[in-house]
Every structure is written in structure tokens, then in C-alpha cells.
Image (tube, rainbow, N blue to C red; front, side, top):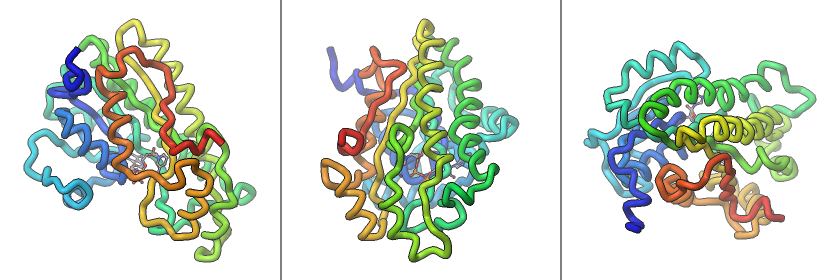
Length: 281
Ligand SMILES: NC(=O)c1ccc[n+]([C@@H]2O[C@H](COP(=O)([O-])OP(=O)(O)OC[C@H]3O[C@@H](n4cnc5c(N)ncnc54)[C@H](O)[C@@H]3O)[C@@H](O)[C@H]2O)c1
């Protein structure tokens, strides 16, 4: 067996939703380095921010790459998804990888939290439903669009992103230190947890339905990534994590390449948890 060939994504086409965000840009870099052509789908496209991030974090200038295409798309809107597929310039016959990564995420420390991290008893129905529309309906739209290509192309790999908060409840005590800096109490919202739990069974449903056509569907469940978060939050999060720290974003590239490539060819319907041991305690 040629090990590096098994992990290679050479000539494969990958769609990454939320590809302009923190982890979406990180995966785009990693998969591009592994040989894939990348389609970055995001509600807000900012190419210069994307390339500056990759230059700063990975010391690599991808701004002249012909293997990255940006398409603005609201994945909650089926029309927007249909239109974005009309703009794809790569050969869809080579579309083999879909990463359902977009979500409603606030970076603790840099984003204002009090409009979204609303305590359970104050939360409105629309705020709860907004999470489902991105994580679940958005994933559904992309899967419905991509699977017919994968069926024609003899298979593919779909990776759905969940969170430790989708397999266990958030410990709200680590968010209480953030309440002082905001006008309202801060709570990690239930909509996020429940939609991330939904991802797990969406994965199993699609994995079993399409396994016979060599379309593999797995969940990648992640723990918290360090993103200039406040000291007290980092301390409390780290003390709940057996490895004693938050993740570095680059540590999620390896698991992603594994799931996207032939290296995981016997894996479908599974949940790969990469969380520094957070869920083991
Ligand atoms: N950052 C973490 O610590 C962490 C931990 C566990 C899991 N995750 C998961 O990783 C994924 C990426 O998180 P991130 O930290 O990079 O967040 P991020 O906010 O940096 O990126 C999310 C991206 O999704 C896009 N998006 C939101 N709604 C959209 C829509 N309707 N259509 C298209 N794009 C849309 C946003 O514009 C943004 O670019 C999410 O699924 C998140 O739940 C993150």
C-alpha cells in the first residue's frame, strides 16, 4: 500500500460550507495542500481575509491558486444553493468531498455575545430555529444537491461537523465569567446543542441509505478551538479538558484529510471525536 497516495486528495473536488470562517479557511488550506480543488461556499465572501488568514497562520500564499473558487451562498435558501452550483467552474464529475461546516458560531472574546447567547428562559422561537436552518436544513440542501453527482461519479465522502456540545451538554459555568462584559447573562444556546445532536443522526441516516453507492457519510465532532479567548474562559475550558488546553485550529486538518480521503474507506455512519479528551471525563 502506498500510504501517502491513500491520504492524497489529488484532483478531487471539495465543497466547504462556511469556508470563509475560522475552521473553513483552515480546512480549505489543508485540503488544498493535500491536492484538492476547493469550492468555498459562504454567506459572506471576503477573499482577502481568507488569503491573509492562510498567509498568517500557515505561512502560505494561496492567492494565485487556480484551485480555489469562492461562491457566495446562503445554504438555508434552496434557490441560493441551486444558483451557486451553476457558478461552479470545476468539473462536477470530480466532486467527491462535501464538508458541511457552516454554522452560527460566535467566537468567545472577539464577537459580541449577548444577542445570541441568550439564556434558555428568554430565548425566542426564531432564535432556536435559526440554528436548525443553518446546521440541519443547510446540510440537507447541500446533500440533496451533491449526492446525485457522487452517485454518478462512483462515490464520495461527506463530512458533517458537530461539536462536543452536540454529544454532551455545555457546562454553563464556564460562560458565567463572560456575563460581566455583556449587558445580559450569557448562556451557550440550546439551539446550537440540539442542532449539533441532529447532525449525528442525519449522518447515520444518509450513511446507511447511500452506503451501497460508495457514498460515505461521517461526523467530525470537535472541541473548542483557541481564538484569542479571554484568559479566564481559556483557564476554565482547559481545566475541563484532559489534555489541559483548547485545540489549535491546525490540529483539525489531519482528521479532516483522513475522513475526506481513501484512508477512511471502511468508515461510514461514524462519529470521529477530536476534543482533547473533553468527552472522556
Ligand atoms: N470554533 C470552535 O471552537 C468550534 C468547536 C466545535 C465545533 N465547531 C464547529 O466548526 C464549524 C466552524 O466553526 P468556526 O469556528 O469556523 O465558525 P465561524 O463563525 O468562523 O465560521 C462559520 C462560517 O459559516 C458561515 N455561515 C453561517 N451561516 C451561513 C449560511 N446560512 N450560509 C452559508 N454560510 C454560512 C459564516 O459566514 C462563517 O464564515 C461549525 O460547524 C462549528 O459549530 C467549532
